[in-house]
Image (cartoon, rainbow, N blue to C red; front, side):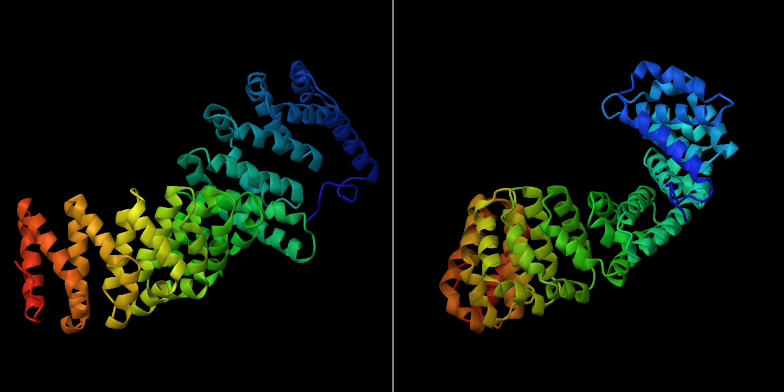
Length: 458
């Protein structure tokens, strides 16, 4: 695969120099937007150098950062002329500049993008992605990414035409070049990742997702990381996709993304990890082995409530996985202190935080109960009781039922006074508010404890 440079052997050295001179002279100049009409007329010239001059001028004006002349180029009839130049296959320089212009037009509004698509842009760019000229292939990937991001119709057309396979094959070329020491190929690889994520959105193609997973390590070094994580997060409720993340060593990258400076990247990575933790016990255990709790320690005090909520949900899923993982959380003093503070002080997340306690009570043994109590278990229950919210009372009842089920009530007598106060307050509250189901549940708990001489009044 060749680049558009002085070593291009498709043209003579003199031709290469001439085209480069034209390009540099225009790109360095300040070009007035009123000249776009002149440039469009040059596209019709019989002189291939004048034709090229027009292409470079249009490219500069339609790619202007603040005032791109896209609609003007369309209105002047530039797009059909540019398509015809590509089909003429005059030189790689003409094809590259033409692709560059169409890529920028395809990044415009829906009407502007449609002009490119309606003239056969999708089919054209799929074919040009296979070009032997690296720059043309790269530009075509960019164009397909723009078209895929516009609407589902274009996305489906690209998929049906094999555009995703063409992009994947170009990505493999880029990866080979990168492995050979051509560091400039990293940007091209990231362009491929971005285009594939646009194709992947709202699609369920495991083939595309598997290739995105393989390229995730490159997105980690680019501005595309958020787009890639967002695309993956749309599918990680499928175990097949989670398995692909494990097979392609993506978990460590996702965990490292929790330290990213971008709130959106952290949010997307956290959402993926929540989905992973909802899978098998082995998956949750692997996350712990990869130091997940160290990342959680820092994120529980994040200034964005969305991040704190996702991290607490992660703890919920880890705690419900097994006794072994519940103990891992209990052993982490920093996390448990932060969690108890959230349960008591954070109005938006206190219920979420207590659900971690609830999930831990499903496995907890007598030797662990004192640790749970040290982290304000009884204080949180008392606070929830005062709030008189039915949903929160149900959580308290469930947690006490879990403890009685897992631990011999005789062993609970160390905390007889605490249980007496809590249960008497709860049954009084439930009776006063006519919560019959909760009253009956509490009666069963009290009767069971009284059988072990707890002496709790009904």
